[in-house]
Amino acid sequence: MPKKTTELKSLSGKSIAIDAYNALYQFLAIIRQPDGTPLKDSTGRVTSHLSGLFYRTVNLVEIGIKPIYVFDGTPPALKEVEIKRRVKIKKQAAVQYERALKEGKVEQARRYAQATSRLKDYMTSDSKRLLTQMGIPWIQAPSEGEAQAAYTTKRGDADYCASQDYDSLLFGAPTLVRNITISGRRKLPRRRVYIEVVPEMLELNRILRELGITHKQLIDVGILVGTDFNPDGIEGVGPKTALKLIQEHGTIEEAVSTLEKAEFPVEPSRIREIFEHPRVTDKYHLVWKEPKGEDIVDFLCHERDFSEDRITKALERMIEGSKEAKEKVTLERFFG
Image (cartoon, rainbow, N blue to C red; front, side, top):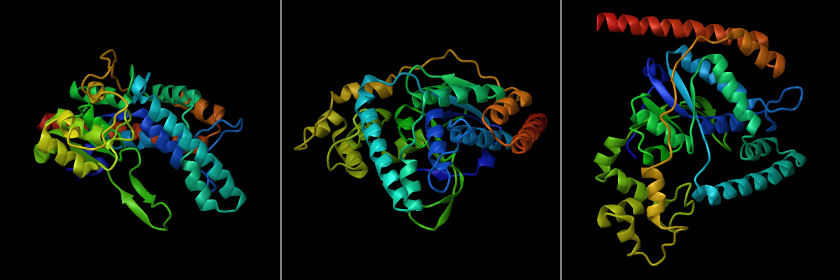
């Protein structure tokens, strides 16, 4: 799929609608102790999500990016199979994690622990509370967060949509940015090798143009390969085969008529409908405000046991970076 790499700094001055659940799951998976245990406060509540959300948001604002976090609402009924599949995987990973710990295989245990991440209700409310205190706008989607993020971008209320999930393109995001919340130096799984993860940009119109298909046909390619609403896709059909089928036959209905085995949980048109006409809202107000330092320190440090010195220094960076970004935009407008 056509994409180009970029630098976070190049996105200064831009607003980005971020798939919040996608980001929070990344934080829960990555921010852990060497043995896989997540960060916790003195009462046992997990705080990995808050650590990731706070410091990553500070980094984004510091370089002049204006984040908007979009939270999932009620998932479409067709997503039930995928949700059950994920729960099963997490349960299996939890068993493997405990076994690896008992056997003293710490690195293996950490790998399994990452797959057990679960986003509990208090984590979502904690995240919204923190963002409000930081002066960062967030949107409650009626259904899929990435669909709402794509819609917000299409309306022009955000410059870009950010998620690790390519489904954002199926929802019509004009430009998808990946690796926004995980950019930086990262260790490759099962190897003692580190790589630099950089943001990637994918432009929907360019993808459609280079592949020679329409957006509706891109959705059909996705359905053939598998989406959250038909996770198994068509057995033996990968991205290249799916693209070739749609290019040759035009629609998924025509394409599957040429295959010996092609089963879907429901009619493909119902899955396509979710992507073409998702449940979204325009009832949101996007305003970036100054962070409430005292409230943040009270919440993160006094309630969740974060280091007050680290939080305070990060807030200073955020405020200073935000001021510099505003001054830069003002100068560009003046001389532009």
